[in-house]
Image (cartoon, rainbow over all chains, first blue to last red):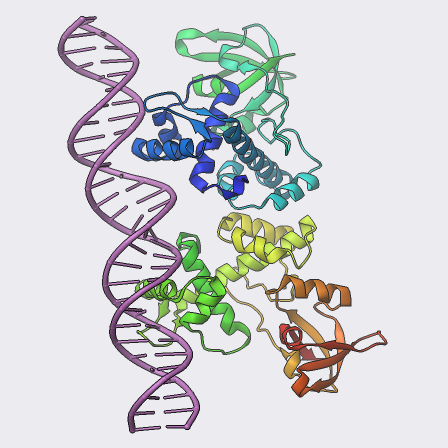
Length: 224
Length: 224
DNA sequence: CAATATTGTTCGCTAAGCCTAACATTCTGG
DNA sequence: CCAGAATGTTAGGCTTAGCGAACAATATTG
């Protein structure tokens, strides 16, 4: 079966489940899916039941939700679509990295496999999207993401930004102003625990920058 | 109201009704819509009733179907989307002109207005798509198509191809082999009425080509 | 460890789009 | 100009995806 044969909502569920476990091992729940997809829990409960009936996820009532091998394959295919589209919109059509998520969210359900492969070819088989996220290969492989959230990275260390969450466009615009993009190097000055502030300094810049929790959790880094 | 607020099927109905009257004044019927859309007449009957309730078409039971000003606006917006997408797929992604129709048919429902305008800009505001069809402006204007079907054009005349119907990809591949594309000049040798054959000769070529009814009806020409 | 809060599921409903079967209207050709 | 053919509409049913209300199970906490 092809990923394009699944309903849009099935594609959304699978991609979301996979994405949630890509960077952290937070267990996925019915209400977390409902929250992210903007639907009510009963809708998700039904939806997951249907996916389980198609052997795309495993799920017993009140139990955990996990992708089967088949489900994972389709989920990764959707992630590939999404990230290639985002890359294409930025590289070829002059979109800003804060504008692409929403557009790709729709297009990923509409483009054919042929179009995705043309885009991949036209871009020279990119391995990362504009936010630094790895783009899985057509076969579903991808280089394993590494790193930790800036919020929990070691104070005093110097790190490279590997990825920035695309969930909040506003935040991305703020990062653009700061010059904080994937592959930027920075040093972590300190964490001020109860203020939930992380102070950083970008490589080659003089002044410190304070980031709140939502910002420092959206940035993933790896030690230089 | 924006065209993107309409359901996919409403967008399809409107575009189809408009397109059917773009080149010839064939009256549009429930069953012609059903045939083109691959659905059954009762589906269309219901669908048209809903469009009429939204004042996008006028239609009394058993009566004719016509676009209102509002309906025409949305129809033209869909045609613009479709033709810009086709042009983009050919120009920027290396699609053949026989491959783009199907893909655009899906994408036209998914792309945002912003993306359409980016594509328009990236292509330098093209005025015709790969099949020669005029691309309406954002405001809905377009230079009026002219010409007649090759099948009814005057024998002995020399003409320029203005457009070729994209309905049949197979036919388009055949025309590609012949070198018969929009803007090609050709002379009409003769119509053989009861064989339904039209004999033409492309400018700069030696041999005559016989075209059957479906081919010579798909080609629109204008006197040089 | 029981009571309560949280989370998940079932049930019954809606709306859109599609279908077939049955019925109504209009067209057409003796 | 009327009968049969062609076309269009209505009625009723199916599926998908959503909802809220009510109920069930699990987690938390006093």
